[in-house]
Amino acid sequence: MRSSSTPRYPLVLVPGLLGFISLLGYPYWYGIVSALRRLGATVFPVLVSSVHSTEVRGEQLLLRIADVLAQTGAEKVHLIGHSQGALTARYAAALKPEWVASVTSVAGPNQGSELADFLARKAPHGSLRERVLSALLRAVARCMAWLERGYQGEPLPIDVAAAQQSLTCAGVAAFNALYPQGLPETWGGEGAAEVNGVRYYSWSGTLQPGGTNKGGNRFDGPNIACRLFARTFTREAGQCDGMVGRYSSHLGTVIDDQYPLDHFDIINQTFGLVGKGAEPVKLFVEHAQRLAAQGL
Ligand code: CA
Image (tube, rainbow, N blue to C red; front, side, top):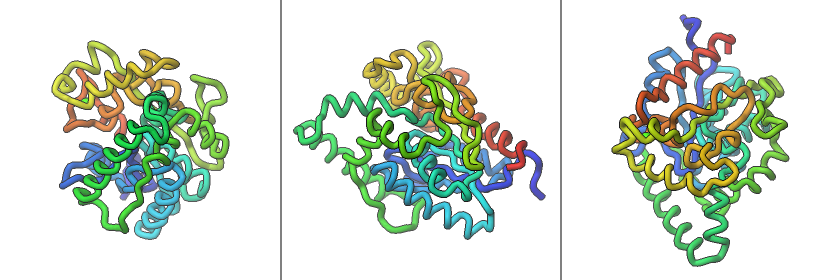
């Protein structure tokens, strides 16, 4: 029998750009799926195109949700998306709200990423720099598809330009005009807690010198990358996780936007190496309990 701390509906975890389920056994949601399963939750880490537009990824996600509903007999799912996975989840919930109990954005660029804007400025469409970066990203994506062990479906398409367009502030603004569910009406505010029967939540972190760059992160390359990327931010300078700004991440009920976690720490990467005293896995477990407490 389901305990009161176990969510009623399956949890579908949606990865971000260059997302995966399991690379030769190494999970994207490091220690998170197992922690949620220990709670008794039914959990499906899913794969969509690792590099593509939010709309194409969102259509793929709708197919995955249909599979989960058929497989489990559940009426709805909870969608938890990291980074571009949050936008992907928002798209699916906008099109099929009857399938979705909640959307949770974890470090989602819900108003775009200043890092994507910086790259678009530095490597404009058609430039040599853009062609080199695109080729590199395609090669990484193909290599990851080859190493993927958690996915058995058809090969998924890759489109670097579409992915980039989907992550810039202008690209996300166009997306938001079509799919505004759960967005705050004012910069830095909260969004509606529920739209079309779907609950909306978000949480995110910021780089905090003396915290996020200590502990396990002293040995973690992605943390160094986040600190470099953070220098490209102007609107949210000093208020970002390296890839997404604090206020850009807001969606629905904002659980917190200042956890001492960089953009990778927030999914417990890499190998659980996170800043001093940070507990990213606990945030997922507490959230599952939060959903369960509402009977969802
Ligand atoms: Ca880390």
